[in-house]
Image (tube, rainbow, N blue to C red):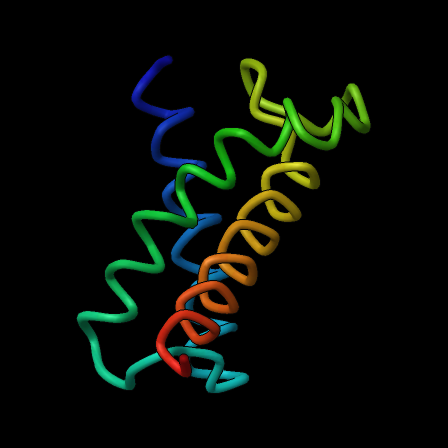
Length: 91
């Protein structure tokens, strides 16, 4: 993976995390620590997005980083992780 691919996935993760954390207030705990953890896990979701959702729009990618599956993967992983933590925390 090149640095530019890593950076693209990081930007996708930061934007998705910011939308969920600050826009929709979708978090377990408020604060920047929770946001940073979302960025880290969101990067993994963006990285695995193409494996989970496929390779969409051949002309809309950079070195194997397909933007739409990366965005969906980041959203999916973050939503699942927040739901799991909220479920475990409430018991």
